[in-house]
Structure formats: C-alpha cells, structure tokens
Image (cartoon, rainbow, N blue to C red; front, side, top):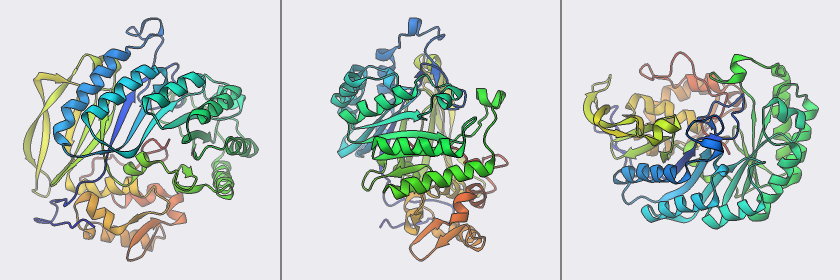
Length: 442
C-alpha cells in the first residue's frame, strides 16, 4: 500500500504513481449517429477527405508526435493497456493500425499481456480485416452493435442491419477471444419485450463482455434538437432490471454501471479509468490525465480533425499560481510561438480531486478500497470523511473499515450521490451529469 504524506492540508504527495494507459482517438465515421455526442466526424462531406479517403499516414504521424511530446512526463512507466476509440477506428486499414502500434511499442514499454482494444462497427469490417487487426497486435475488439432489431437500428441512424451485426460478431469471434458488444436500451419505440429479445440475442453470440446502457439525449446532437419519443422512465427502469437479471443468470458479473463480463474478462483499460489511473490521450479531441509526485495534470486535444492535423492549438507555458486555499498550483497559458495539438492543459486543483475520483470510482458496483482514495489523489481520507458519512446516512453508500461501495439506492440515484462530493471550487456547473458513460465502457 502506498504511503501518503501531506506537507500541509490540501497539498498532495503521492508515494507511488498509478497505472498508465494510452487512449488513441480516431474521429472519423461513415455517418454521424443522431444520439452521438462523442467527437466524431463524417468522412463524406469533409473537404479534406475527398471521395471518402482518410488521411491515415498523416494522422498516424500526428498521433506519434503527440505521444513523443508526452514521453518526458512518463519516462520509466509502462503501459497497461491501449484503447483505440472513435469515431469508427475500424475505418483505418490494418496496415495503419500496425504502423501505429509498432511505433507505440518502440517508444513505450507495454506490460506483458497488455490489453489492446479497437472499436469497430458492423458493416465496416469483414473477416480478413479482423485478421489484419489481430496481426497488427490488437487483442480485443469492441463492436458497436446497439441492437439486433432492424427497426431500432433505423431509429438510431445506424448504417448496419441486424444481419450485418450478427455476421460482424461472428467474424470478430473467429479472430479474437476477447470481444465486447455494445447494446442500448430505452430506444425510440422500444418495448420491454424488444429489449429482452436484444439481450437474448446478445447472449446467444457468446461474447465474454457486454456493455448495456440506456439511451440518453445529450446536447449538441440531432436527437437533442429533434427529440424522438422514448419509453417512459418506469419502462426504462424495467429494461435495466431485465438486462441485469438476464446477464447475471448467464454468469456475467455486473462490475460497473454499464459493464458486464465473464470472470476474468473485465475491461482492463476502463477499470483503469474508474480506479482513477493515468492515461495519455492522443488524437483529435482526446483527453488525458497524468499524475506526478505532487500534482495531477489533465490535457485536452483540439477537436476538429483538420485543426488537429494543422497544429492549430498552442503549446502551453507553465506558470505558477495559487489555488483558493493558498496552495501552489501550475496553470498553463498558450504560447503563440509554438503551435501544437493541445487545446488545454492544466493542473487539477487539490480541492477538485475528491470529486474527480468519486465520479469514476463510484461507478464500480463493488466500489473501491478506502486506501485507493489516498493512493490515487494524494489526499487523506479525512478530506471526504464528512461526505462519506453523509452519503451513508442517506442510504447511498455502504461502508466498512476497508471498502466503500454505492448501495442499491446509490446506484439508482448516482447523480445525488456524486453531488455530495462537489466542492465549492469544483468547476462543474450547477449540476452533475452522469446519465451517460463518464468514459467509454466498451
């Protein structure tokens, strides 16, 4: 167990750094889904990608420059996982993915058996392409199926059919032992029986991991501008219960709000997010978090692919500043002389670390060891003891001397639980939104 020392209240000091992962964002997709609020951009209609061609070589080169610029911050650390998300990363050729992963290995050491995930959509891959991704070093595939019902797929604006979804899953399983299926429920026009049918079909596929989450209407989406009629709240709650019961009966462990896995098949990359580990973020719109012995820094990349490729961000200059408690923090301001892909880089104020930790860790069904809070934030447990006691009194948490986990009520009212940990200086706006995945759960 890491020992945590404090120079004074509110100042962190980490005796050991957390595990490190790598997130790679490939932002292009064939068509933007009306519910999607991820940083994704249609290939067609983009002036840069003429006739649907993607700038693979240029983009991979930019990804590697991003990675190289961050190497001094993580010297001596190993990668526990790599996650290539999007967009639709399977639009890139196996050769481009091979070039990317080979270059990553040349610059950073990967842990033995490191998990390497690639997101794919049915309809954009076939058996030979999956074999190419496997040969490139990918060892886990996450398929965005969403539904096995053609009417539901049409309502969601998906480009694949139910038949293509079935073929895609089988093609993935022919090349990979570790495959995840993404499913959604609470869809426009969906009934409880239809949701149950989707789960039955997903179970019949035999993948070791399933992610099932309720459709939520997010700002800056087509559904937000023109909301479709959705099932009533009680019906959606029944769908969630049906999902959990069916997967539990089939031997899947429900280990995170939206994630279910066979024993030994939990997603290592996402567990690192939820346990407040570190991750480098490269690619258009990617976010990252890197811990140092006395502070935690976050970085965000430019979202627009063309701006990203043309370095229209600005490299930050670190400047000393003070937080609200008088502690020393480091902030960044743009340096106009050194363009970069960074949109923003900043030190997380110590007062915000408790909320950031809880935002992730309280998504875990089994919660977290109490010692993990100090190990990952560098703060004493006393920094959140009052909030933990308050949550326990409200029936939102279950706690003993070693662990804390959300109660059944806490899982159902996660927003209410997380709101208890929002500090006065936490820049989160007037409310906490966790209805959708805080991170990818694929």
